[in-house]
Amino acid sequence: IHYALPVRHMLYDALNYADQVERAARRHQKSKDRRTRGEFLSGFKRSDKLTPVITLTLYWGADPWDAPRSLHDMMQNTDHELFSYVENYRPNLVIPGEIQDYDLFQSDLGKILGCVSRYNDQDALRQFVEANKSFFSALDRETAALLEGHMGVIIRDKKQDQGGGRNMVKAIRDMKLESFAKGKAKGKAEGKAEGKAEGKAEGKAEAISVAVRKMAAYFRAQDNSLPEEEAIRMAESILR
Image: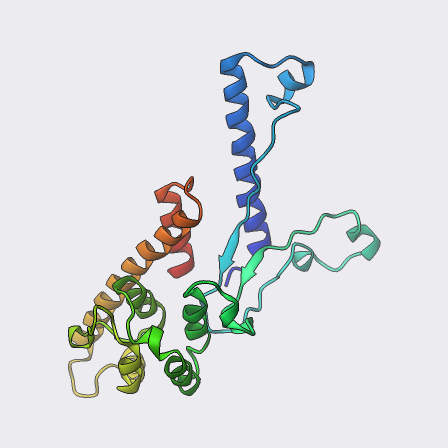
């Protein structure tokens, strides 16, 4: 949870627009096509247009979002008349636990978010996975790694690869999520706690690394102009 998200989004958008203006100014300086004093002053021609920027935050946590949802929410209580002169800024925020109908998504992202939103309720999680058995029975490697990194459920057993997919349904039925949670919280009961904890940490780190690459690839698929390094930083800020 980021308690200054409205300012963070506002900054991302402003920096992107400023970069667009700067690139336009360099282009006009090179082509020497500015004609008026205003165009020389701003570096931006009257006919120039910006590309709209949409910054979207997907909240992957299972806990309720309790951070500000607008710039006004971050400000101290003051005269409401004054607020009418202060531009508000509302970040685009997707919270899985607040989504009413996951079927509205036109991709498999809806099922993934529905799964994440039930992380703290194993019964609800099991029911959701069973209800979407056709999807969760044949996960691709990257999606399986993404869910592993977020939820701790172990679904990488090669014996589960039937028809080229990873079977999360079987993982849930085998209560691997419960055993992982217990091992993470208390370690193994018979002595080898430290070694097993290190092994689990390494496995989870590997899963998160794959998840970062998966999410970065998704961001770049949505925006072909997004640099790979920036996509990775965005994914890491969400996952880590």
